[in-house]
Image (cartoon, rainbow, N blue to C red; front, side, top):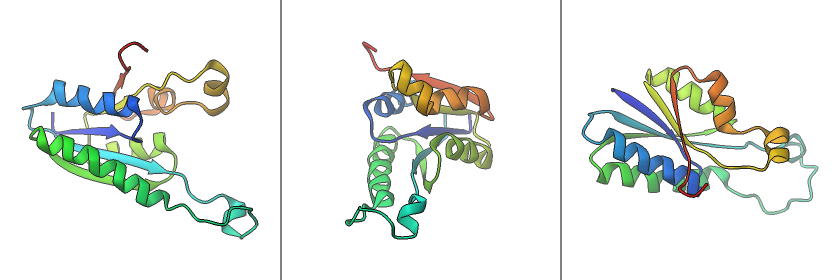
Length: 143
């Protein structure tokens, strides 16, 4: 295996996916591409019509999340590249997988309730239909 894309958002599910990739791919020589997508500003925020006064640096938060997982993979002996991008998480993961010719995308499962999953969808559900390569969905123990 030459490249693995791992999606992270700092959640417990994402951390479980990181650990599973370390367990399964250690010693494979694969480069791990750690990916974190963050939402852009809403239309109202872009034109200044929002009650929000203090901007939140979501890119900075995403960089911090990726740095933690990058360190975990490096400590496990992997070559690591990081990708922090604005946009939809599923689309971003698929794009990075295509760009890097990854053989696997790994993500954590979240366990949303049925209504929230129906309204918002989930990254793993979107990827199961649109991933350009094999997909590993990792559940937390006890989920």
